Length: 319
Image 1: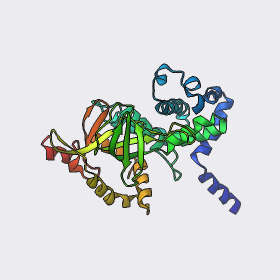
Image 2: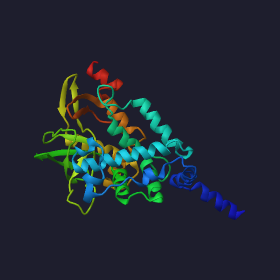
Image 3: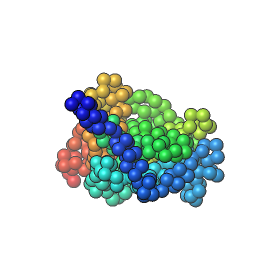
Image 4: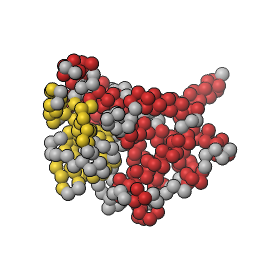
């Protein structure tokens, strides 16, 4: 009896990746998944332009941006092939529900851009105690199959990425210097959307780190269209965000994550929110307007009256 109970417990603790790997083996035998298409996907820093980016559009991108864009393209292809596996039904359903709710396409249809939503759906949306995602499951499957280690490295960096709040610290040519709230981490980035910003702005965005540790590609990339946060005092009066107010916001809310360490709590909150659609809902309700390469948001997630598209915010603004 004890042996049977141990077996039951083992089955209960089997990870999502383990289940998918088992299912994938069946599909590989049936040739439902094209293994050669997966294994031939390569990414190499030393010969990036020649061997990694055959697509015309990707060839025109900055190198670091192109590496991550290529990685996301390949990840999307892999996810499309495994998303219908029964073991991934929770992730697939949650992604589909959020897609229907927020219609990610960028302004004016939705303030959630496709790039933002895909990153959230692949890297942050998770299930289970191990917080497994489409990306983590795909990465495990790629390691099992023997996909190029450079591509797997890019997948892991994307998986570990998260949203963050950053203070704009100035520009130098095409580079922008950002300082993250709470962590105070300083980073040098490029912004593919073309928005260079102004010193003192607060950006809500996702930054991908340098792709390889031993590389001259030593800068980061703002991987989505940046959101600049502020306050909307009247219908058309947008004020730049105040760093102290955002620090106060985190002071009020980080404790809700259950993480004892302040930086760990911040990183957890920026990755997962306080509930599944926390940051999706914030973007949706806080949208003010958009300009070339940037989207403006107003208010704080925990203050409905500050959000332009909440019932309380619209009443305050007389909308």
